[in-house]
Length: 326
Image (tube, rainbow, N blue to C red; front, side, top):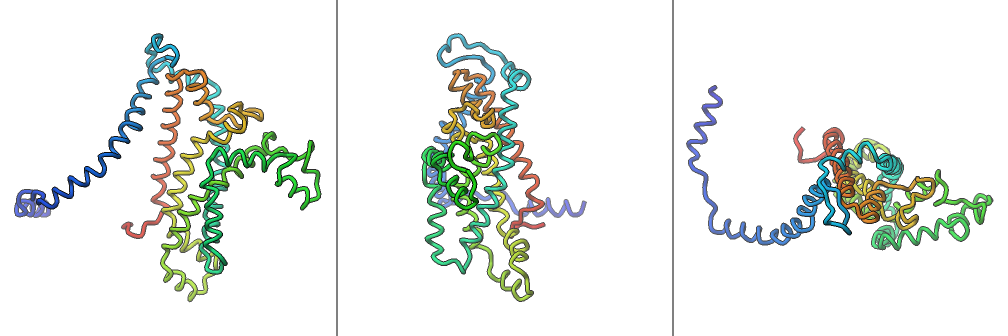
């Protein structure tokens, strides 16, 4: 009780809250002015469309026949959860690919950044530019390039495998990367590695911010390269790793361009590339069933939100922030 009395006494002695001075008000107005355009854009292109799509999910209507729209309440949600097997098939495909592609992309981006940050690397700036350059290529163009690279007859990957291992990897009996249900996820992962330049850049920037004193102390103690990597590098850059993880998960849940360009959304081969966003695109823009399409989109939003919340909940156990009090 004495402690609470002290707090109340301190508040009374502090007096009324001070008003902002003239300079502070002027700075606040300029701050609001600078973010006003962003707020308008966010409201027009994100907030209002999201609210509208939530309303759409309660109706059954087609863009070509708006006058026939009818209110169905949770009917679209019942259809999604219990009557549409393609929803669960596409989710299985999406999560299967994510479990394969995400670790490969994360580990590759991190170790390439470690390599590009090495003091022993000759012409480091040239290699950094080369590894980042593919991220500047438009996604559709990159997919078309890789469709040629992975071609079973003319692709240079099959020719390289045939030359190195002396096997029949080219021609009618060659490796069919994009037509084999077992290899198609490997092929799509290779295509995804084409665009990890941004993740490499983020990791590289975080690696350059690790204090060199930590490595010098570890050298004095005789720590190996692997020990320094696991005990110093990874903990110090864990916030950026976490950032890349969240972006990677959200990006893979929205995986669309590669399968659509290569298969037109057919799911070839054997439905192994019928991703969730393909199903959404077909319902919303193929069949013009915008009510059900909005429901599919909101279901993915809830899934992504749940995974993101889960990741943030577990971050306190493995993400290290230098300024955070434990």
